[in-house]
Amino acid sequence: MKVKLILLGSLLVLKLGASAQSFNEQIVAHREKYKADFVTNEHSPLKEGDLKHLRFYEADSTYKVTAKVTLLEGEKAFKMPTYAGTTAEYIRYAKLDFNLNGKPTQLTLYKNVALSANPAYRDYLFLPFTDQTNNKETYGGGRYIDLKSGNITNGSIELDFNKAYNPYCAYSDGYRCPIPPEENDLALAIKAGEQKYMGEKKHRN
View 1 (cartoon, rainbow, N blue to C red):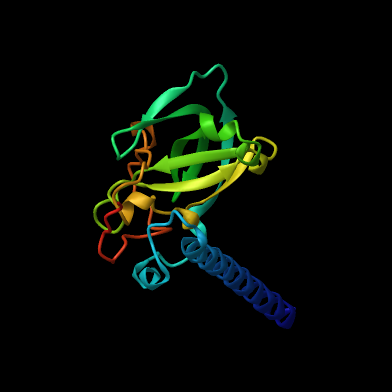
View 2 (view 1 turned 90 degrees about the vertical axis):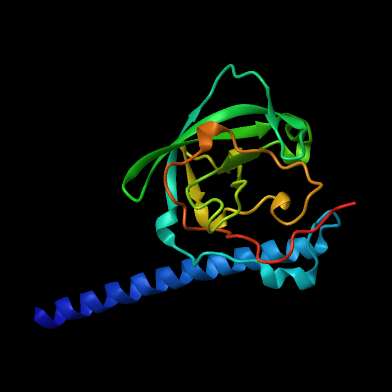
């Protein structure tokens, strides 16, 4: 019996280790693709030589949570301000409720009106947020997470803060980056995802 318990314990440790390694590998692959997109996107503020200045928190599976989705009905479009002084039309799409580090937390998910008219981006959803790491370890203007309506299953959606990224405004001026609404200002530190850009901020013509 003792030998069997030891074997079961060893298998559990191996399984947990493999799971952690697999998660780390997924985040590494996600970030490599994220960096590659800067090089291939003609509107990108960064070139290949700038990528060495990108910084990220270590992958942490505790920041990957399942959120309950409450769809918002009858919402009217509103103008979300951008850091360029312009606005973009969005609709409040859903409320996300989840527990993070033992604390009940809520965020609002948005849909861009113009993008939703394009069949290629019809299911695109936008999750901007600010938290207590801003202006310290992360960009002061907040960070974003991209989601899709197709990611919602049985009233829930997977929310991975390890995939939180900076808006282009973190690297250069001249971009129309939406300002996260106050309702998405989290009273906690999200130590996951992208950190402050360590390179010199660029000026776009």
